[in-house]
Image (tube, rainbow, N blue to C red; front, side, top):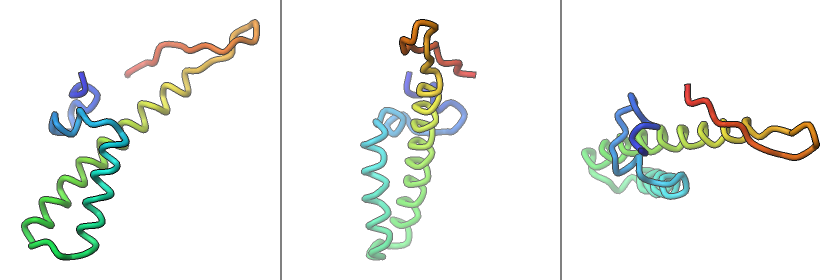
Length: 88
């Protein structure tokens, strides 16, 4: 199921399975390591590539959350409800 929300973006399943918070934490760790500059070139390139995938995943999770929030509606009697999210 997690792979479907990232369909077409080539996000590996192990990244797609991460929560937003876990992916963001990994991304922050990668950035800190890259900023220190103590990686070998190949490691830095791999870290950058993984960071780009983590960034895409985080952005997708944020868009998904935004769509859910936008679907919260106010009912005629003043009650708050939700409408099903259109995935298209």
